[in-house]
Length: 246
Image (tube, rainbow, N blue to C red; front, side):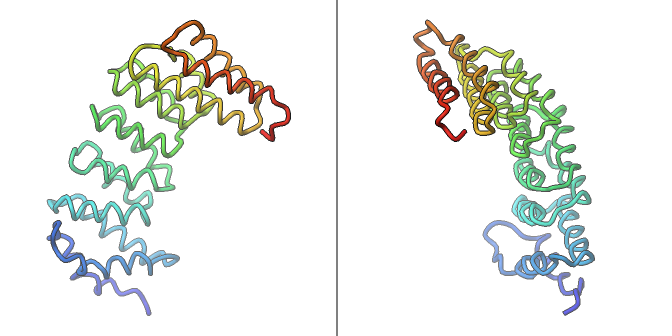
C-alpha cells in the first residue's frame, strides 16, 4: 500500500497533546509507520520530519520522549538540529542524547561535541557518556581537558576515555594519577586497565604490558592501592603467558 501521509495526521495531533497516563494506543499508527518506512525514503523522511517538529513545540516531556525514541531508530542528519536544541534542556537532554548516541550520522557526534563546550554539571557528564558510547575518538582532546574539572566530571571523563580506549585516550589517561585519592584516582586506574585489556585482546602484548607495568609501579608500596597492584600484576602475567590465545 502506498504511503499516505494524511493517514498519520490524527496520530500526530494526538502526539502533540499526549502526556503520561494517556492511552498510548493513539500513537500506534506512528509506531507502524516507523516500521513500514524501512527502505522507503520518502516515507521515512516524512515521519522523521514530523517527529522532529514535535521537539520544537510546547509538547509535554512524554511526547518529546516518544519522539526521541522513534528518532533513535530512524533519525538522520536532518533531525540532528532539533535533537541538539534539547541538549541544554534538563528535562529533555537525556532522551535527546539517547537518540543522538544511536544515530550513525556524523552530524550527531558533532552536535554532542559542540554541546560539551556549553552545557554544565550533570548535563555535561551525560554528554561525555554519550560520546563514550559512540566511541568518538574525535572528542578525546575535549574530554581529556575535563580531567582537571570538578571531581565528579573528571571521574566521568576518565571513564569515558577508558571506554573510547584509543591511543590518544590512553595517552591522556597516562598523564593522570591512578592512585590519587578519591573517585578520580579510581576512575583513572579502571580506565587505564580497560585500555590495557583492549590492547591485550587485540594481541598488542607489548603495548598492554607497558600499561600494566606503569600501573604496577604507581601502586607499588601503597597499601591503599593494593587492589590495583594485584590487577596490574595479573595483567603483566597475562601479557607474558605465551600459551594464551590473546
